[in-house]
Image 1 (cartoon, rainbow, N blue to C red):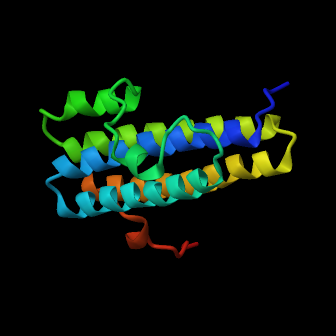
Image 2: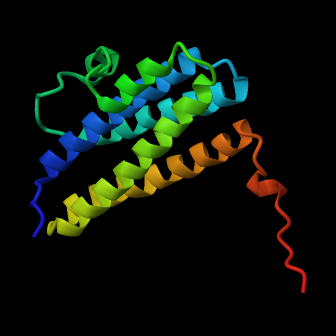
Length: 165
């Protein structure tokens, strides 16, 4: 049986995850040289800001201080994905590597939040996790599409949708 999270515990987890993702995307965007990838990374960072604000509005704890201060606080450089990003900054294809890291992180988040949602009895708490899963899946799809573009793979909009007999 999974751990039962209170709504406040779920919000705290979501706030931390969104802040870490926001910091990751902002850092990746700041070093991206490919303009299209930079815009995608900035878009993702801004979406994380929106998610962070939405979760913060319902959080009653004082762990994070006020929203503005928390958003402006330094990135958690001990976050494993952020650490990996910092390691690849000196190499080539930073966008490719950042997107690969982002794909892995978003996929892990989908799995984690899906599992947590299944173990939660309280419908309001389950809704928090399910919302994160849905939004994270959208991020994954966007990142996957941009990765395919950067790698010069056939983009889904270029695929022939007609099957011939």
